[in-house]
Length: 123
Image (cartoon, rainbow, N blue to C red):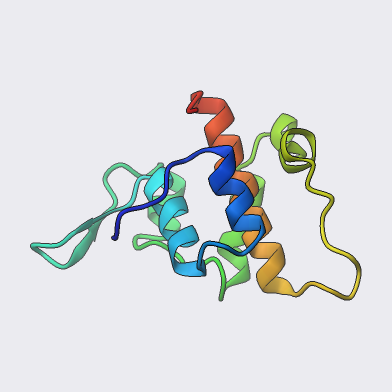
């Protein structure tokens, strides 16, 4: 994995504003889920990944192309953190007819990362 942007609200806003590419956003989620890529063995180490993720996704899932891992990501956000994009960043969502599944999945990843940020007190 390449160097990732810092986990902060500027980065979350950049995700929502499509200033960060899909691959980097997914790599951020993978990293905070616990996936690590071992360059020497050219394989994924999932030993730091929570068991239910590790069992269902031994390698990091593609959140943009596949709906099921995005649904699991959404469900893993604590209820009290579901509206963080709106509450903390003023994100108003997308206008009807102007978004597609990719936009929704990026917003889900942004919300999950913001929830992680809040829960782990990163700044």
